Amino acid sequence: MKAASGQHFEQAYNAQAAVDGAMLIVGQHVCAAPNDKQQLVPSVAAINPVVLGQVQNILVDSGFYSEAAVQAVEQNPDGTPSGRTVFAAVGKARHYKTVADLLPQAEPAPPTVTASAKEKMAYRLKTRVGKELYKFRKQTVEPVFGIIKEVMGFRRFSLRGLAKASLEWTLVCVSYNLKRLFVLKTRAATA
Image 1 (cartoon, rainbow, N blue to C red):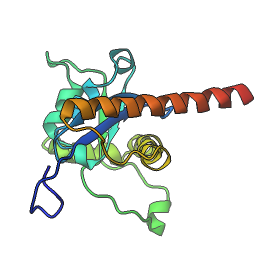
Image 2 (image 1 turned 60 degrees about the vertical axis):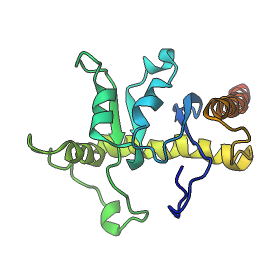
Image 3 (image 1 turned 180 degrees about the horizontal axis):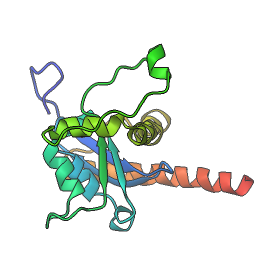
């Protein structure tokens, strides 16, 4: 991958994880792509088929958004709807709220039929349902990566080569899931 300075290349990989509402990793893969623009379709494809049949909403940040990827996820190859809806940020969101943001907001006007796919996605996220669903993303996938990095101490791959790095990431994800299942079982036993 090209380094942040753009002056040289580094041996690096991009690890992806699909996480469900219980904060369990249901799909993972590793790629050599420097950003996530082309990773929505492979990330959805990495989800266990049994779980994927139950997936209705897919929440991703702006790095995953592309019109083609959203269409590929929301439609089957024959053009019929897949039953899945993507909620993707289409721009950078500010990290503060104004007083006006805290007041009840009216539903935004639907986009026109001539609106671009990006405008339609922006509308989807501005609706009450879109806002509620998208808030859920920061409570599911973001903590998983935080736990993997900070609690489990996984910050870089030890192995070289895409196949070996993929195996290492799979082991990290399985380890995370075992820890998470233990927590969920302990909570259920004490409840």
